[in-house]
Length: 137
Image (cartoon, rainbow, N blue to C red; front, side):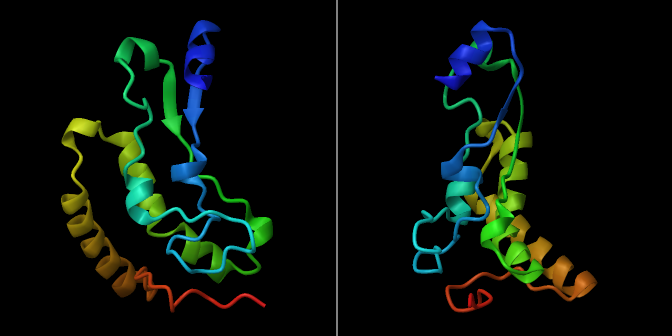
């Protein structure tokens, strides 16, 4: 695996797992997938374990996580923002917080507070439903 090989070679590693971190993918089943993209839900992004359950001595070279956005599939800034948030919040918490202190339920409560802040401060709604994604031409 990449984790094992980079450890053997003494290389630092940043995790950007497609099944958790690709923010250009739709985040709700049934949304526009451009004909090929898998769906990556908010909960799936939150469940990222950068160490993939391996022992610390096997993964101490992992220096971070990366949320990936291949913007060529997304035509406008509204599409980019819609797909990025709130999953970027989930990936950030996954990268900064050890698995043993993370709670999906607690994250959902914190995210509700963050949504209210962003709506009030920036007039941007981070609520995501199948119906409110910007339309693709």
